[in-house]
Image (tube, rainbow, N blue to C red; front, side, top):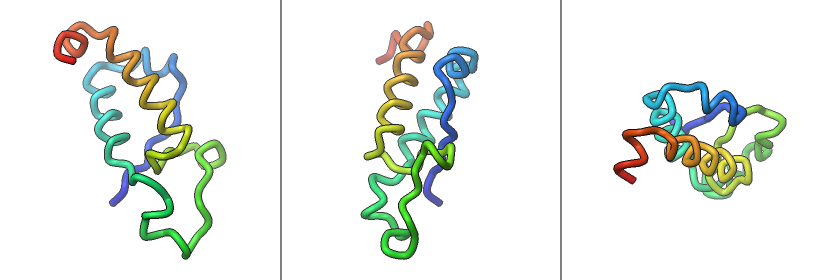
Length: 84
């Protein structure tokens, strides 16, 4: 099943444990590339993350913002920053 990732604030990210952040990263990476290449294309309307509260596709501005914020927070974590 394709991934849906809840949109959360940077403050919420900062309060998450590193393991939870890594799970979020995995879920973001599991999102489908775009709505146009998904099985849902042609049979339903493209979801808008700001309306649904969830990110589903990597080509969305919401996905790019979420991944950038996640990487920023992870870079402050001791063990993650050493390996990347």
